[in-house]
Length: 112
Image (cartoon, rainbow, N blue to C red; front, side, top):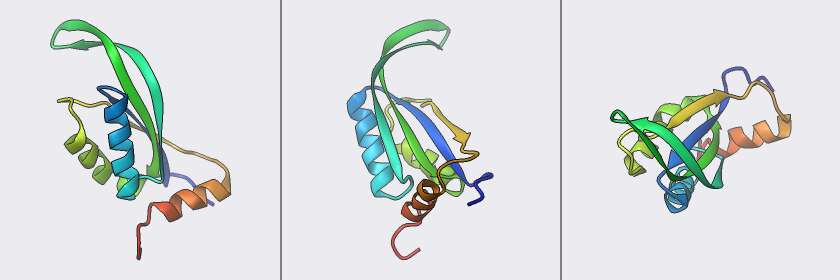
């Protein structure tokens, strides 16, 4: 299966683990992603409004098709508590063909 520009991983940070779980469940239920992995809480250091901040966050990694990125980003922003949430997409350049086929099937939605 040719994966060039077809699939991606999206890294998203959240205010906490509960928000990460809520976002993960929503994007998978809505078939904007085939899978979302919620990572345990982590410590974040970042600049915000001219000040160095530090705090606990949650994170998730979402697997999806590039064609769904705009809709996924819009949905996550609507669900997110941050003004400027971290949502960055990384291309999947190769992988297990069976997994990539599954990823494609699960993001097509009912009747697609």
